[in-house]
Length: 463
Image (cartoon, rainbow, N blue to C red; front, side, top):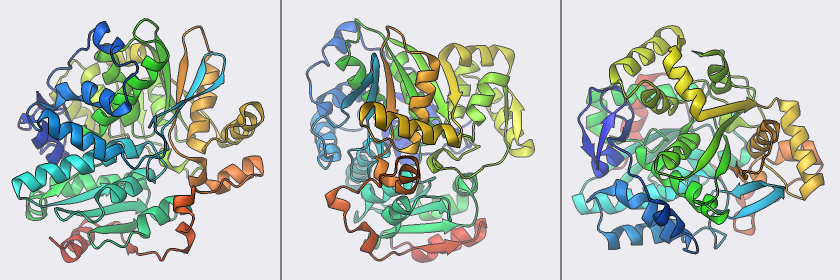
C-alpha cells in the first residue's frame, strides 16, 4: 500500500513513512494510492467479533508490511485496553431508527482516543525498531491535544508539544492537557484561535530546516493514521445494525472534517452507507460551502461546542482531492487561494461530487442547548454540546427506514458548564478522573509568532 500527497508534489511513501511523516513536504495530506474494498462476505464476517478483531480486519489492508500480523494485533490490544467499556464503541437507541454511537469511553473521554491511542502504540513500536526519536507538534481545539498527551506521555522516543487557543477550550479539556507530570509532554497556550494554532503547525512543517532538525512529526488529523483508526467504528456500528444486508446513515459533528472523511473511506471500502451528514455549529463553514459552492472564511465565534470552532478544516483538502478527480495541481491552487485571500470557489463539477456524498446542517447555540435539554427529557441521555449539534442536525434531516447513527464525540462531563446551563445538571467526571480539578497545572503561554514557538520547542525538548 502506497500513499500520495493531495498536492501531487511529494514523494510516494509506504504506511510507516506516511504515519511518521504526517504532513507531506509539499504541504499536502497523504491519502492511499487506492482504496481497498471489502466484500459483502468480509463485512458480514465482522459480526460478533470483538472491536479489536474488527479493527484488525478493517485496517490491515492499509498497513502493508509496516507490522507483522502478530505485531499489529498486539498494538491494537494495547491501544484499547484502557477503555472503560468492553464494547469500546457501544450503540444506544435514542428513538425509532436513531442511534447514538458512544465514542467517549477512552482515557480522555473523547472520540480522539480511538485514533490517538492506536497512533501512540504504532509510533512507539516503529520508532523503537528504527532506533529513532521524534518531536510531535500538534494543534487542538480541545480534544486532540489531551488525547495526544495521554497517548504519548512517558514514551522515551517522543517529545510532544500541543498548542491550544488560550481561553478557548473547556476547563476539563485544558486540565487534561496541563496536569500530566511526564517531562516529555508540554501544553502551549497560544494567543489566538484554533486556526492560528493549526497554521503554526503547518508553518513549522514548511520550515524544512526546523522540521529536519527536531525530526518533526504530526498526530493531528492531518496524519493518515488518525483517519484510518476512525474508519473502524463506522464498520462496527453498521454491522451491529445489520450491514451489509442493511444500509445505514451517519451524522457526524465535525469541524476539521477528519471524522466524516473516515466515513467516506468506509463507504469506498464497501460499507453500505446511504447518507453522510456533516453537522456544524455556528462556525458553519463546511455547511456554507456545501450550500453555496464557495469556501470562505468568516472568522471564528467562540461557542459552547469549542472543538468545532474552526474555519480552516484541514481534512476538507482530502475531500477536495477526491472531488477534483485526484488532481493535485488543482488542490494546490485552491490551498494557495485560501492562504492568499481567505477562500476559494469550488468548481461546479467538484461541488456536485461533494453534494452527492455529503449532506449538511448547522445548529445555533440556542438550538444546541435546547437539544441537550430535550434529549435528557425524552431519553435520559445527557449529551455533550458537540453531540447535541449532531443529534439536532440528524433529526432535521428526517429519520427514515434506514437507521441513522449519530456520533457522540465526547462525554458530557468535558463541558459541564454548557450542560448545566441547559439542564440544571452538572455531569460528574468518571471516578478515575475525580481529582482532575485538584491536580497542579503545567502550561506555557506563547505568542502567535513562529520564531518564538520554534525557539521554545528547541529549548524544551529532551531528545
